[in-house]
Length: 75
Image 1 (cartoon, rainbow, N blue to C red):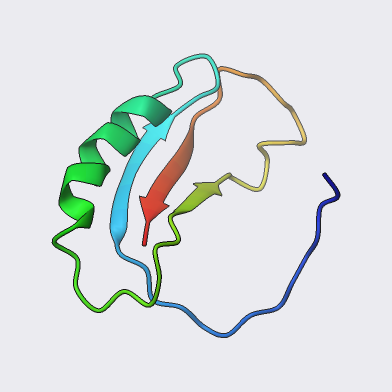
Image 2 (cartoon, rainbow, N blue to C red):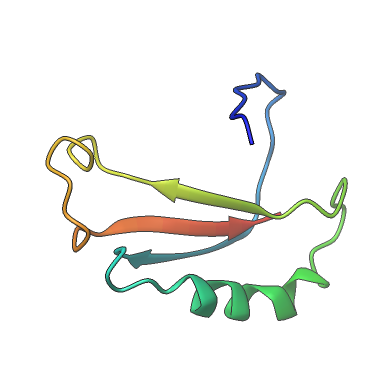
């Protein structure tokens, strides 16, 4: 796989978020909570599911797998 950066139009997303760390990974909990509600979200353009991670500006400067970040799952 080769990473690719693309520029796209503005999107509006709706989803759920959880704070977690790599040590305390709650990805399965997040997706399990979101997926039953996905079918109730109207006017989606396609079936794409986005996984978005938000890190503090210091996250990678002093990497520690116990440091928390916010993960979103959204459509």
